[in-house]
Image 1: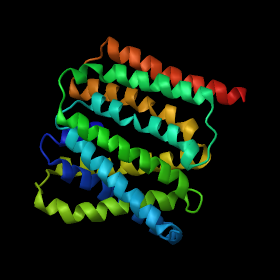
Image 2: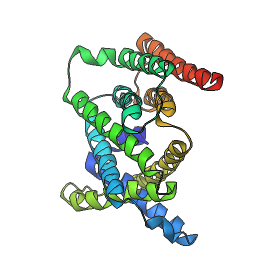
Image 3: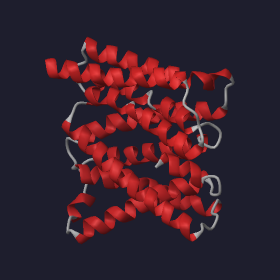
Length: 263
């Protein structure tokens, strides 16, 4: 989804691309839920938490897509996945989850892997890096709120509210930056919404089934996926830093899996 967004932003403003991601996500969910008679998904027992979650997700995507105008997708994704590290470190305090030494080791390995991947980007600082760091911090808050709200709302309700807040907010802003898309761009924008809805459904379901601390190191795997897409579609090149960092990230996930199986 982020790779497609970066391609679209060669011709369309970042806020318009972000709007489409949320608007079509919401539209797809409303159509599906209405068609299957699942009107209960629109009712939440934690409206304030869902509102803050939605604002967090809108802020994350908006700042990330603005940052992608000046830095590579691989760099941005690597920095974004400092967020799971923040989640793991805070899960014990805010969510009451048990954090073991192996969890911390996995976090350190994942953190080192991320730093190795983005190392070339810190040779000359760019504002996009700072924006992405801000987005990563907000994303960590979104992760924690998702885990918290899963105890009172269904994953479908959370999926709906993670999109509808951003859709409403950005619909008020997008007219000021609007550029008329071509028919192919319209189809691509709709496809982004479908990818966003599918990805968030799986994400919320995962947080319902597993503690946040166990999921966090695995989320770093998106660094690998984003870099591969970046190479195929955007012309970025793989280097020794990426290979070393990816090895550490995957190793962190395998270490956590081994520790969970052993326990």
